[in-house]
Each structure stands twice: as structure tokens, then as C-alpha cells.
Length: 233
Image 1 (cartoon, rainbow, N blue to C red):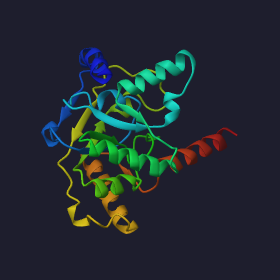
Image 2: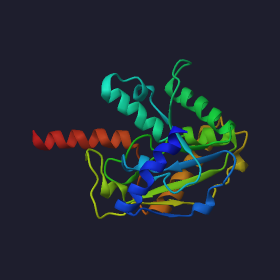
Image 3: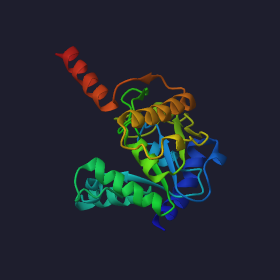
Image 4: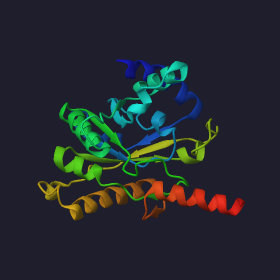
């Protein structure tokens, strides 16, 4: 309920101020489990990615987002709850296993699950190598996978910028469902998981128009920060 209250409050304001657009909405099933696999350009993705969809989009977030204290902790909990984020239960083991377990539960309940295969925001607006957790989840749940590409959110609000730039229209493109039925039952094969993940990333590259980089975004961020420090020093 809180999700729809937040959306009802924010939606008119976001449409009026930023004039966001969307393409391919009909590619998202109106009922049943769905995996939305998207690029991740900006904190603004949390606002504009699901804005046009009539269904609630649930995403996975670190439990740290829900355990903060004071006013900041309260605001953080309310925000992430309001945009459909659920905390990952880490009590049963590694974070990746907890995310998979939670994701499968969300899909088994017939919901829409939003995933960013890159694992973190792009440090420079390019599309980076996807992690294979999305592939395992797709094969084990057998839910349809829809590529979900954000456009212009990096230019509007790149990482590190506290407020968005005005005059830039953010957009989102939903691609056609990707069929991975030929791989069902092969979710323990690492080569299959990589092939499925790469197919998802290729679809995102075509939808978003981003340049693809064959390395993980987290590694690229560390390299860029190291190069920055060296240039200053």
C-alpha cells in the first residue's frame, strides 16, 4: 500500500517537472512473475524506472538500508520501502545466495522483480559486464525476462550529484521478452549462465545505445578512482 501512496504523490510532480517518457510498455505482462533486467545509470533510476508501469516493481536492497537510526535512518527506510525495495536476508549464508532466495520468493508470489545485473551504478555512463545471478534466477524461476533500459538518467543525475539537472528528459525502454527456455535445467552450468547474462546485456546495449565495456562496473570504478588519485598526486 505504501508503494502506491508514494507513487501517487510523486508521479504528478515528476511528470510535470521532468516530462519522462516510456517505450515498449506493452512488452511487460500485466499478470504473473516477471524479471525486469535493467542498466543502472543513476540514483534517479529508482524514481523513473517503474513510473509508467501499472504494476509494482520490487527490487532487492541491502539490509543496511533498513537498519539506520535517527532521522536519516527513518528517511532511508521510508524511501526504499516507498520505491519497492525489500531487504536481503543474509542470515542463511552469502549475500548472493540470500539475494537468489529472496528473488525466487518474490517471483513465486507472482510479482515483478527489478534487477540491475551490473550490480552497481555505471561510473561513466557506459554499460558494464553483467553478473550471472540474473541468469540463475531466470532459469530457476522460469519467469520471463524483459530488458529494461534507462535513458538520459546519467546525464540528468550522475553518481555523486545530489540534485538532478533540469531540462533533460529521462526515459525508459522495455524490450521484448527474452526466451531462455532452451537452457532450462542447466542453471548449474557456468558457461550457460554467462551466455544468458551476456544475451541480456546485449539486449540492454541495443535498447539504451550505450557503449559496452567487458569488465565489471565495480572494478572500473576502483580503476578510475586510482587513476584520479595518481593524476592529482
